[in-house]
Amino acid sequence: MVRVDRGGAARAGGLGALIFILAAPGAFAASVRVVEGESMRVVSGSVVRAQEAVGGRAARLPANGVATARFTSDNVGSVVVRARALGCRGRRRLTIVVDGGTPYRVKPRGSWREQRVALTLAAGAHRIRVSFSGSERRRCRVLVDRVRLPAPKGKPVATPAPVAPAAPASPLGRYVPLGAAVQLKYIKQDAGFDDAFKREFVSMTPENEMKMEWLQPERGRWNFTAADALVAHARAYGKDVRGHALIFGTATPPWVKRILLSHDAAAAMRTHIHTVMRRYRDSVREWDVVNEALGSGGTYRSNAWTEKLGSQYVEMAFRYAREADPTAKLVYNEFDADTAGPKRDATAGLVRKLKDKGLVDAVGLQMHRSLADAPTREQLEETMRIYEQMGVEVQVTEMDVLAGGAGSLTDRLIIQAEAYRRAAQACAAVAACTRFTVWGVTDRYSWMGVDQLPLLLDAGGAEKPALAAVREVLGG
Ligand code: G3I
Image (cartoon, rainbow, N blue to C red; front, side, top):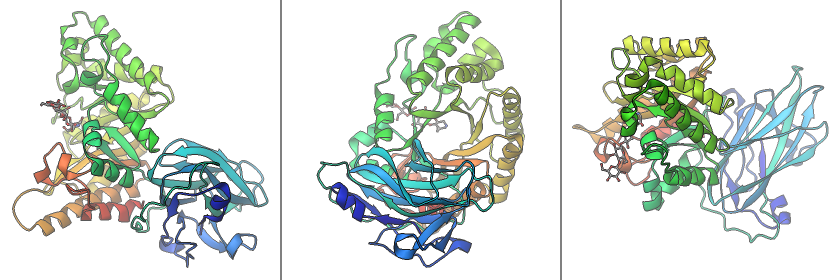
């Protein structure tokens, strides 16, 4: 068990944090003692007696062990983890990640020590994850017995926010962030929507605001206002941002078609990719570099870029992206490529070609589906393993499942939940699957229309069976 302690916070001048008890999963299920209604969920690891630990129990994190918790806070100035390393001689590292953002790394010692990392969290729901890695000896492990979230000194004590429902335990044993596409206008106009996003998701994909037609509507005339605001909002709440999408045929501004010479089109593409990636280098570490290059038969779709540069535009875009930000994760994002067929073959062929040249890190499977055509777990797992064997990560990047129509609403929502569950189970089963993103926060603002009920939260922001199903698999 990892205790989340409030005593230290009181000494530091206040704490606006609540963390919720969750039973440790599966084989690691143990009698987790509630300490002031707060605890961390041990996703991977076991609960052991530790004489030194306050309260007599601590979470033992073997290499790759993870503990997670959700909390709501108005006022946090640092995270303090009390930890100790046992049996370690060489490299050892605790990584603390709040809301899927910047990882903080500390080195646990042989005796109990408090490891502090400074951070500032805005009001709202957050998620914290503590993991241990780097052991060169099998017996090397780390004990963690307390995590405190003190407020900055001198700041007023914040009122704790209402306790959110505890999430079910995950059988996954590893962390797959759950993300959603978001449009700035809905954040601005609907506080309930924004709350739902902040509460339920740890990463965000700008639904439209980073598309080329938005960022550079005329050549050399840039408009970063909406993208800047959305990225700043996400980062203020500790959310990861997936950049979407640098080069996307149908979101290309008309001026590209007016370019006469191919070398000029290449220069325009390079300038666009460099300018955008470098602007967001500190906050966006993952990009859909090319979106939907292929049609249903697996041939290239024609667009302004194929007109000027031919199908090699895809590889050119990835080259420019690698140049612009060599450490960013570069993703090829495609629709209808999650089940067997010519489209999947063509997508895998393209990704392999890019991978052989060191240009791609991940493939995105969009998964816009309906109740009738959502894939089975086996179908999706088979697809994901193609990429795993290639040494490429895979993500679900835009899932929604249309559930509008006749028949019982309850039945439709249950069938929908099972479609989401199968996708989450496939992702859970394949280690190369590193993120699960749905295409919107609530049904109200889905691009498919509210009547299609395609997302994890209903129009009012309440949890649907689909969210419970995804959480049961992925945790959180
Ligand atoms: O914001 C303007 C508004 O000012 C204007 O009055 C109105 C008039 O039509 O248009 C509004 O812009 C719309 C925009 O969404 C914002 O809502 C565009 O017309 C509309 O075409 C645009 O649709 C987006 C679509 O991509 C096209 O880029 C959807 O929201 C977005 O969900 C969808 O997302 C795509 C992914 O990028 C790639 N994969 C497929 C996915 C679904 O099509």
